Image (cartoon, rainbow, N blue to C red; front, side):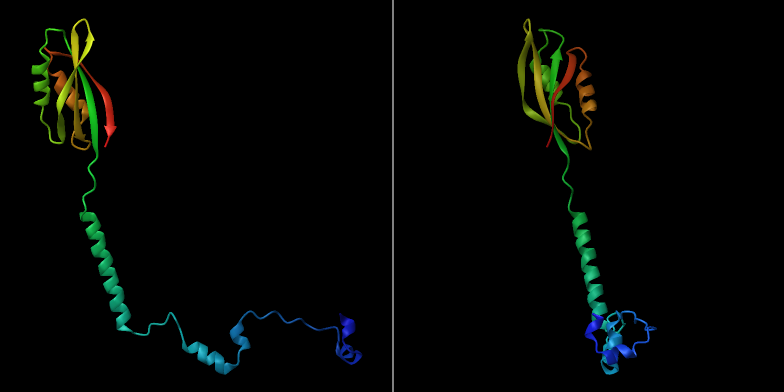
Length: 166
């Protein structure tokens, strides 16, 4: 590469030459008039424009109203469908009367199904299969089961057959 330079230019080289550092500041390379014009615009400067402040305040107010509207919407109520098997003490138990007693249990958030099934167990003994929808936050399944078991003279045991989230 050095051979491409003429001997006159090569003679001017003293060997003490310093390589200038690369200049990454492009503004310094521009003429001063262009630099002055560039310095006039400051995107972060406070230009005192009230319209921008009013628009920002309006946007903030609108976001606040939207957040309140979202809070007002009621969250969906968590519900479950539960099916119980109620086994009586024996074949002498009147299942219609027992089912009416069970359907008579009332709690906030407990909704009994209107129909129940009579299914055979063995030796002429039948069980009741009955269902209800419960709101999870208001009704405990254990509490409903205990209420059914309070009919000690008719009920031997209560089991949950199915528990489905709705």
